[in-house]
Image (cartoon, rainbow, N blue to C red; front, side, top):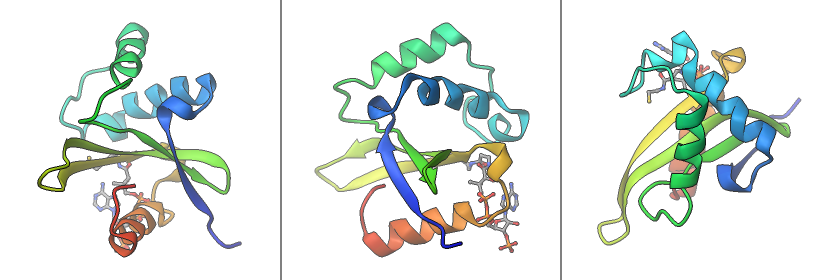
Length: 115
Ligand SMILES: CC(C)(COP(=O)(O)OP(=O)(O)OC[C@H]1O[C@@H](n2cnc3c(N)ncnc32)[C@H](O)[C@@H]1OP(=O)(O)O)[C@@H](O)C(=O)NCCC(=O)NCCS
C-alpha cells in the first residue's frame, strides 16, 4: 500500500493524540536521543501544550501515516528573518525502522518547506 503522510499542527489535533505523544516522548528508546532525557509528567506536558499557543519560535506537527498518528516533527528556534530553524523528530516506537524517518526527511528536502 502506498504510504500517505500528512502533517497537522499538534494544537489542531484531538486531545487523545495530544496526550498520546507524551507516551512516545517518554519511551526509553526515544528520550535517550533527545536533548532533555527526563520523563515528562502530565502537568509538564499540559503546560508545554499551552506554551505552544501564539508561539512563533516553535511549532510541533503530528505526522499521520495513512491517517494514524505516527510521529512528531518539530522546528524550533524558528528565525523567519534568516529562514532557519532546528528540526527535531521522533516517532511512535511502534513505527521505528519502517522507512518513515527517511520519508519525512526526503519530503522536507523536496518540498523545501518546514513540515
Ligand atoms: C530517528 C527516527 C526518526 C528514525 O526513523 P525511522 O522511521 O525509524 O527510520 P527509517 O526506517 O527511515 O530508517 C532510516 C535509516 O536510519 C537507520 N536508523 C534509524 N534509527 C537509527 C538509530 N537510532 N541509530 C542508527 N541508525 C538508525 C535505519 O537503520 C535506516 O538505515 P538503512 O536504510 O541503512 O537501513 C526514529 O528512529 C526515532 O524516532 N528515534 C527516536 C528519536 C530520535 O532519535 N530522534 C532524532 C534525534 S532528535
